[in-house]
Image 1 (cartoon, rainbow, N blue to C red):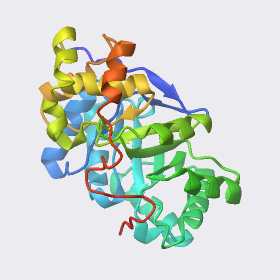
Image 2 (image 1 turned 180 degrees about the vertical axis):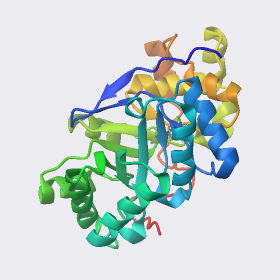
Image 3 (image 1 turned 30 degrees about the horizontal axis):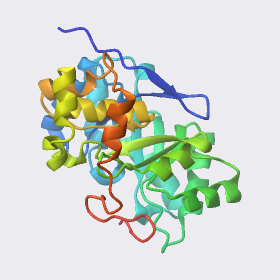
Amino acid sequence: MTPAIHVPNIELNDGTSIPAIGFGTYKLKGAVGVEAMVRALEIGYRLLDSAFNYENEGSVGEAVRRAGVKRDALRITSKLPGRHQQFNAAIETVEESLYRAQLDYYDLYLIHWPNPNQGLYVEAWQALIEAKKRGLLRSIGVCNFLPEHIQTLIKETGVKPSVNQVELHPYFSQTEQRAWDAEQQIVTQSWSPLGRANQVLQDPVIQPIADRLGKTIPQVILRWHVQLGAVAIPKASTRERQMENLSVFDFELTSEDMAIMATLAHPDGRLQGQDPATYEEF
């Protein structure tokens, strides 16, 4: 078997750490999903990103058991759905998430969306704080939270998220959000880091950079995330693509490359128009 690729870690503001690249598990379910996750863990991924709404926490837990990697070497993430943001429901959902995965704890648990019209995200955050105190969670964070949402959490509870996972790819680079997160010592994670394999993977602006480096466009994009300090969580089913996505720590983009990449962003770059200021997740 090929030796596992080493991935550096990034420190979080609560004293824990996460790998600089993780593995996304959205739509990976059942036996096929377990096989894909086991392959990823064998290759060297140490962060698996799941969610209650992905309906695959059981598959994640099974992959953890099958892969033979020590539990304390892994970082397993799940997320609280919008419909369970009331305090008691949130606690029960964390417990149910753990029962599904047959795990004793999650390394990272996130509120999936703020759902501001519902107005319960502070209550949900208080539940995650309590679940962490009970030892069910090691680190807690949020997804898709704007600065004003996070400011409200800090004001009401005094506890900062460790991570803010947001849509982030070359067409939507989240410059202001990333800068704000960094000021608060909050690590930004990137969902859909490759733009859900849309036209960005054939972008004529990125291709010359890839050609010069002898790398692929996905590798250039993922290296861009690394150099931004954002933790990308790409998904891939085949061993070849999984290895390609993780093989981004043996080269660097120049400052000129990064400047060229920055020209690709545009304000309406969200893939499905999911604006956290108004979007409501079920």
